[in-house]
Picture 1: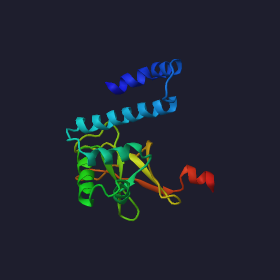
Picture 2: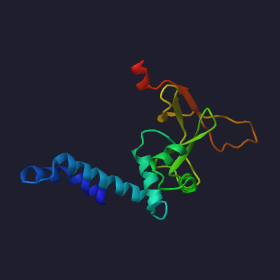
Picture 3: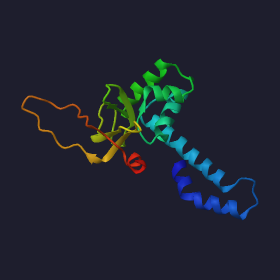
Picture 4: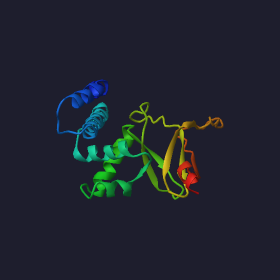
Length: 178
């Protein structure tokens, strides 16, 4: 509700800033609005998944919301500035996977990365059937939401649980630099 209100009324607030003498520059005001919107989104995700709101969950979910790509456990540990121990980070990641907030991405070196799920995922049912791209130059992992995994017809008696398709190569940003 707050997020919708702020989005609809951002122009109004900006016009009020410009017509009145104020010490708050417009760019700072906009950053405050974006922070409030991000915090509302973060709290909505935790509440929707019936999770208690802890500092650890808020911090880790904020990392995913602000990350353009996938994150490794080690990346998350570094970004939390040792505020949370390794077990807390691991348990939070596992809870987020179980609730359909994030999904696992296998890598070529058999480690696991994590990325934010889309809206259609839910507890126990991930619907992130898309390609993951790992750049050989910058090591960034990108969810390619617009690229679907083709249907795989399994032999009789086999049941599909999950399909992981990982493509490695050079991403568009690194290709521009080469």
